[in-house]
Length: 282
Image (cartoon, rainbow, N blue to C red; front, side, top):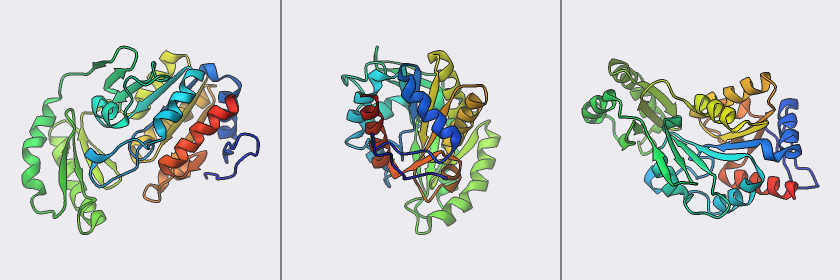
């Protein structure tokens, strides 16, 4: 459903849906009430085989810094620990991003650029329990490896000889392990994350938009974990707050692309969109 058509005036992409066009129009008409929220991996940062090496697209922070002062707020909503996203994104001490907020662990953590402070909940006991069991469970799956995320753990299969087969083989056992320990499994692009229940990007976005008094919302993501945020924008639109759903294009996650009002070409396309918004706002 996404579109790559561009207007000639400000090089702005044209959403393919009426609701998306309404969301974009509302943002442009009243930017001071607009909330722009973005996923990190795959949206602001290219997907790489080793998540520890993921870094924001080199033009992402300058584009955000140019746009943010014109808006009500900019937030990064990620499954990563907030401190890791801040470090890998290079978001600290950036002129123009003084009021950026990073919501980590699907909103369970919050980092505020204005103060540099991080708030986080106590660890869920189930995470330690699954962490102890995972090495033996993964021993028989070549190329599968564990990423430590503090309040969660993630199993990646992108390095396996057949990443999809490894993903499919692990999904059932990991789901059972998570359920035994009071956790949930969040599937993504060749990754299965075991994390505490109760928070997702939709909950985080709804609460953040409400606190910010948003008059419009743009959300950009690339993976299955972003679907709750898409649903939150749908709910906001149904309640009268215009919104724009952006897919940072991926052939790996067609569900998100099919739900989007606008599909752009990965993090580079997100950067172009942010720049075009800044240009349109003058």
